[in-house]
Image (cartoon, rainbow, N blue to C red; front, side, top):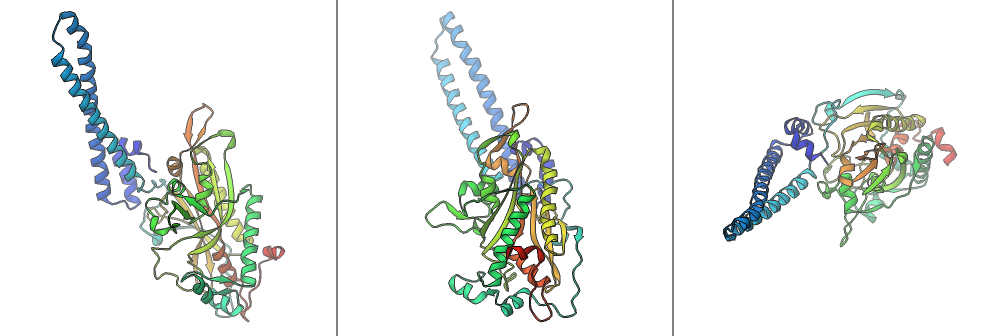
Length: 415
């Protein structure tokens, strides 16, 4: 959640940053009006409280002078009622501001480029050169069907569109990738964690999915529970409403979970294959750090995911996302895009974000610093990697002229 005190104190500067995130003028105008109303009510309250204190001090004087107290008592009672009304109005206004703040995205870091969508993202570097083929490379759904790795029709039959079933070597490679990724991350210092795939609404509020993105979530009927869209949610919320010691930080965690997304805003996109599914496996990285360490940890997380792709021999590039293309909670994001020769383009396979104290403020995750002061932590998250998309990348990059698919050396011990 954005810092309401910062927004109120320096509205124009903060509003300029929010415009970079695509927050419209109507929303900003409404917020400014609420802050102005809050200032007016606070001034009225302070005036009424000062008047109450002054009138209360007159009781002793009136008694000593033998004056009638009835008029003064009536004035004090009326003023007390006014104070109560102003307090209630101020409380209601602050509740409205808090609700509005819950729908406002994070402020972008200063080095995040301006832009509206993926066309404005900035390429930072490329890792590994794509292989040259002496034949026309196929797309993953052709390879999957010819090798019997993915059963698209039966996946739809047992569920609906955007579901599939992995078979034989496809299923074995999915499992091998999950184990390989977890082991790789663990060797990089990330603690392996197992978390629930069902979370409550407080957890989704803490990481920013609720209330704004409720339509993208699968909700369990009759319960305030949801299927997770990413392991970021349960991993981060393990420490919701806690005050950590400085010695515990940084916390570096990795977990494999199934993930569930309605993909409500992607109608008509990637309808073939398994690029965009309602259910998919992902191995996640989540870190909770003191603010002073979050930039260093961010670079560690990017390097970890990039080195993992390199170890699998998969060409990829680092993309710095523009302000308009970042996720709701992110202050800075680097996407890793893997080369898919069948499609002839790079596609996102990992997204690493520093949310600064945005999620920590919502989830109330704090730590006690060396001065024994409670401060908000910084939280970071990243895919390491989307397992299905890694399987796609292996199929397309390791395809042979006869239609067979080779297995990366790194995965052979896991098979």
